[in-house]
Amino acid sequence: MRGLFFAMALATVLSLAFGTAAKAQNYSYGCKPSCVLKTVKTYGAYGNVTMKKVRICK
Image (cartoon, rainbow, N blue to C red; front, side, top):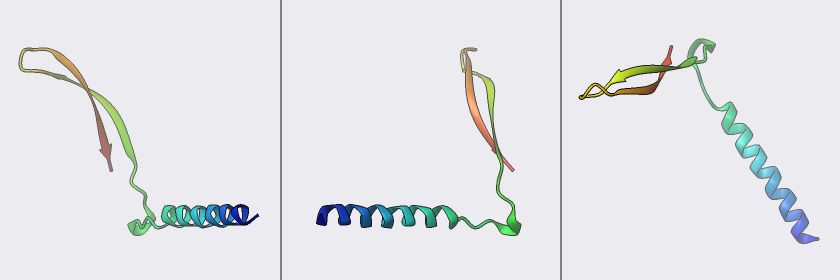
């Protein structure tokens, strides 16, 4: 019975801790950064084609 109460208390504390950390992000003027993931084709030193994924944020 004690183990059940301990597990319930631990689950409650962990859920509150993770919930408050998610709300702690602070953005100026209420704008959240928006990012776009693009695939870019680049060429190596010997002309080999490599595809890179680039994140572009505003």
